[in-house]
Image 1 (cartoon, rainbow, N blue to C red):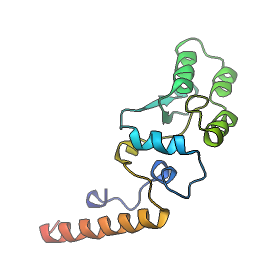
Image 2 (tube, rainbow, N blue to C red; image 1 turned 90 degrees about the vertical axis):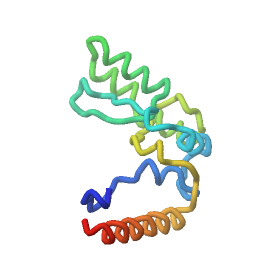
Image 3 (cartoon, helix red, strand yellow; image 1 turned 135 degrees about the vertical axis):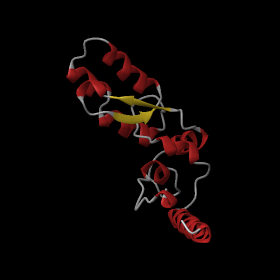
Length: 135
């Protein structure tokens, strides 16, 4: 992204798979095992598209949206209280969980400090490579 001119990146999914993140270990392991195709877009029918991890809860929201959806039914199926249970208890199918396509790049569960050291090191390496190429 840096080489393409980005000034920042959203790394929420990556941060979830860190030692300090207060979510259940089952979710962290699921993120490490996931690929970039393990996400789906929900809530399109409400005009507020949201990318989430593809699980039973997300499929239920999509099923509701395929019909003539009542917004209240969609909101109930995607309720944050269900995701809270997922975060706390580790049941991977009880709720929807926000998840970006970058999940396919998550391969470990480092500390936040180690993760940001890695991000900075990779950014510096990218700058060096781009400078050598005179981009």
